[in-house]
Image (cartoon, helix red, strand yellow):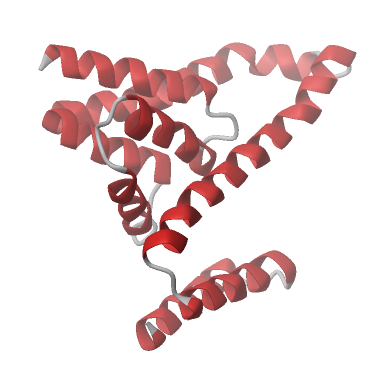
Length: 177
């Protein structure tokens, strides 16, 4: 049990340390570590967990780490995974916030601040590919795809309320799928 907790701590600490932009951008890192490297869950199980995670409120990466931690080591695994995922970012934020804000005019820091959001976008794009592959290969639905594109257009392009758009999306899924 101690060995399992140690692996959870090291794996999720690494994800927390390199998970630029946090949250959903960490999904790719979690998939790489927990599916490909550790084999704690399968790719199909990972895709299912992601879908189920979006049904419930809370941070996706934290819920995902908790589920994987529970599967690997029970309740102590949940705690170890969630703490390990969040602690590196919290510590780095506390240590470097003043440093970065007081030196944002310096060329090196300025370049870093410009580049980091792009890294977050790249990680999110990786998540889209990761989530899309199993859907296309195993459970493709034109109706679901059209509804998802509609949700994206409503929120991303027309700037409709995220809450209302998501509510309409969920109702449409329940009626049409």
